[in-house]
Length: 511
Image 1 (tube, rainbow, N blue to C red):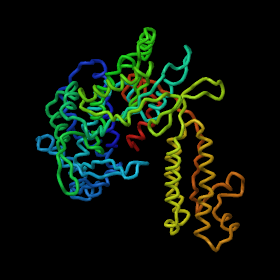
Image 2: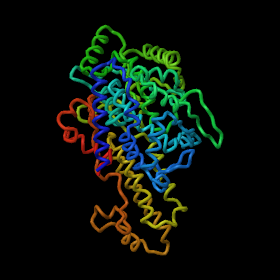
Image 3: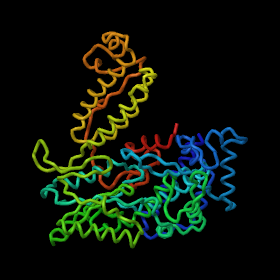
Image 4: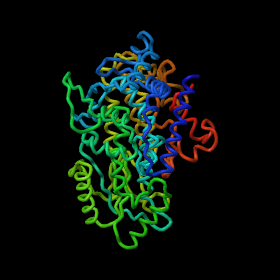
């Protein structure tokens, strides 16, 4: 039961840090290093990393989870060595190995991905355990990227709500500014980032650790480089540091968006107060470096705000707003956000204008292109069973993400029809000498009308996009459970919030 013991220790520590940070807005934490290098913290960090597929990917030192487990002394020796290096202040991060990952739907464009060593990932995870609850108390509710309990659908639901009518009338949002920051992660200024961290943390050893990770360097094709700016994408700690840095962007629009530690009604009252006096209001929804700004005002005021925002980012945060990609559109024309097409259009039942989430046509084309690639002539050597296993994760992932779109059931039905004929064509090419009647009888799941449109080979069934149906994602507001909220702390830690803890235990990999 050591895993559960470690998890209980981590959870209790994080709850206390979160409560202290929430109760005192200006509290400074100056004794955190002992928590970072605690043996229980390192053990839980290893438990998280070892169950991640990334633990099989080596860094610049060539170490993987398997190699650590197979060496003399195994994991215990590995953790003891890291513990001693941290205690003696001799620990030094290794350079990050960089890989270029193709951007989805953008041919010829790549995203740099940093792969730290397993030892560095372990220390970063321990740092994240300690720092995350402290800064989580300061983050704005309209920020959704890389935060516990939050996802892209929460951000989309928040935007959709702002475009829907209220009891006072239709949505006043007239324009939308689609924000695009050039190379945000690579352009983060380390000095400004450390100043943002020092607002809460003054532990010298912790600050030295963070600064060491920022200065570790990047290994590109055998050459070591030390960029002056940026946090390597792929590190365990990088998303948290990025949120800490971009917190200033949320503060800029804090008058019109809910602030930490306050009721959402206060922000509504401030927006209503400004609208009554014919002042423009701005509501930001941010997911990491992707954000949209809903504008209640004229086109001129939207243009002025875009210019003011670009100036603010450049002067205050040393970031550059892309002039060609930062667009100002009307909600009726639609805009892209987090893979969805968001548009304000009349509802079918009442005819009033509401916010709708739709599947972009380019996403549908990209999906069909990917399925065609996996079912072309080069895949004929596969058995139908292997082909179905290759396609099922793609179908499941795509369906899970886009199941909340308006008219998703219609699009899924079209995709299922197209996929059925695509697989039928693939089987016809693979088994040319087999009659159609025999071929279909062999690979169809059954003879009932529902099963006739399902392909199966040796108990492996090809999944359908319509499996599980579609539904609307309900907006959860700003009070989203994260495991440390006050409402989740009523009673013993392992018994509070029954709707939350089952999922939380699953993420913690408690057996």
